[in-house]
Amino acid sequence: MAQEVKVILVDDLDGGSADETVRFSLDANNFEIDLSADHAQQLRDALQPFVAKARKAQPRGAKSKSAPAVRTQDASAVRAWARENGYTVSDRGRVQSEILEAYRRAHGG
Image 1 (cartoon, rainbow, N blue to C red):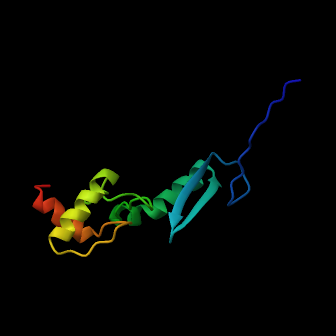
Image 2: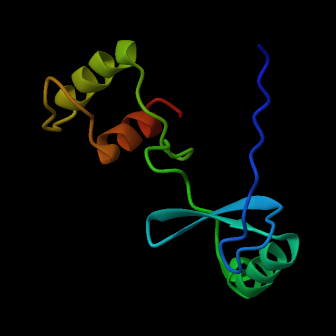
Image 3: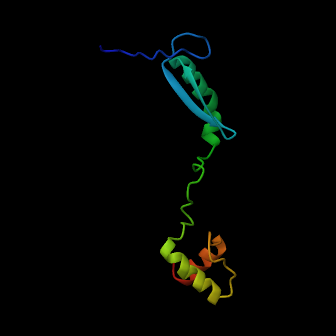
């Protein structure tokens, strides 16, 4: 026996028919709301002055392009160099960013 499943979106503002689900974030909270095309445009228009002045944020946990992580095979070389050059560095965990920068400068990176 075949089944047909239909998803019908209902506008969360007025209970009418919705055309799309709009997703947005504010104050580290993610939201979604089902809206008609008109209501979705109203939301976008209301946010537009703020979006125009805002900057895009990196997703949480994203690595910075300015200071890429040290590959595991390089970490031991960085630690050895740091110790030879008077830095205090742990045997495990992340290597401090100032040590990484100094290592890169010393090695033309």
